Image 1 (cartoon, rainbow, N blue to C red):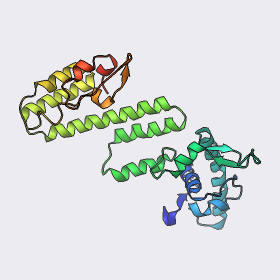
Image 2 (image 1 turned 135 degrees about the vertical axis):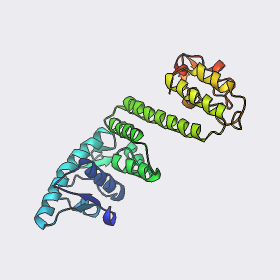
Image 3 (image 1 turned 120 degrees about the vertical axis):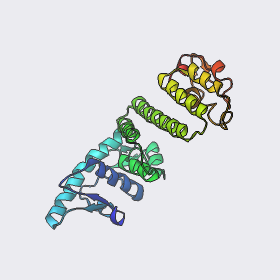
Image 4 (image 1 turned 45 degrees about the vertical axis):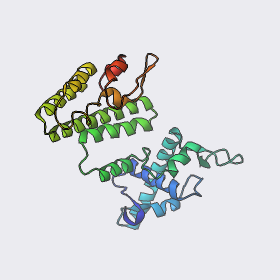
Length: 256
């Protein structure tokens, strides 16, 4: 982002890049309440990749065209709405909704800026798992389209993948052969959704420095946290001794 501006190449127009530009302007330009038909207001937020003045003008027109599309996307997502105030109810005036203000004011990366959101994840993680990133990207896409349940499912699959990777990492770090063997079996039980087998495996570990304090309390049920099933709550036990007794419902006995 040179000079705090977002690059835009009219030869390969990218709608997601335009989305970044629009969101950035909403954040930094508190006076923007009217659809821009000239492109002048975008100047502080965009770096046109165009060698000639003619191509720069063409780039500006291309940006304005795509910004209109992004505007209606943000309207559909509840971030923007037509009308500036009671005296200006119609377009080209618009305002940021209450929900939109929360989104814009947030200092954390927003799912409504998927490029920035995923870039932030890659900055925080040295080598993010490709499968996790693919499901996370799909979760962002479905959220923007208003499919919140589907978005949550995609995010849950990504979380399951992270959990299994964590299991693999921990299994490789265990020094006790019996603990390592039991933990690998526990991971397999989690994948199959057999909570009862996982609890039995945990309870069978008797030796090793981690036998009583590290992963004996782990279970898919614990990670779900107090999930309601059949009118009952799954009460989590901090050391895992009573998980099996308290989590017999069908939902809690399934895998992550």
